[in-house]
Length: 157
Image (cartoon, rainbow, N blue to C red; front, side):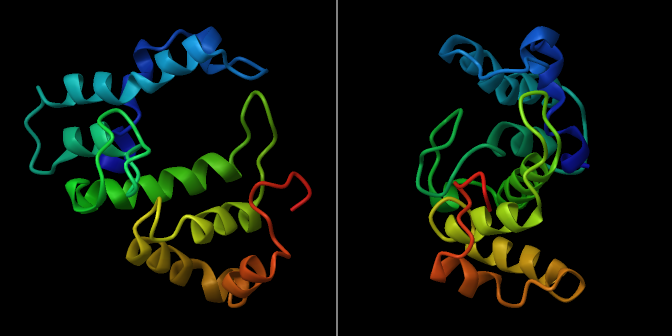
């Protein structure tokens, strides 16, 4: 349920910002970042048997504290939120955006491997990789990232 509702706070973000075909300004990015708190505010008033509001609030938090909106670190981020965070990063990278085409699974998985244990929960990343490994031929992805043959920051990857 949290996976479906985590971004519901984007209803409060102006459509011209959500669909902007070029880079956001710092001010616009701050507006976008507010969607997590807005989602929490909406969902915390709905009685659900799952921690959906908490996941919506925390899904942009990162293990090293570099995320938002609260700058939580490590185990202060719920496991459910850490799972949705990995799924959200994967989805965001492979999906087309108004300002860029989808970046492909190799780059998305490379980003997850690069941030494994620092930005993203290592066990969650490992589980995600296991889900795709056999079907997508990702058995050597970690080695390819380590060798530098896939760079998640490169537009040529």
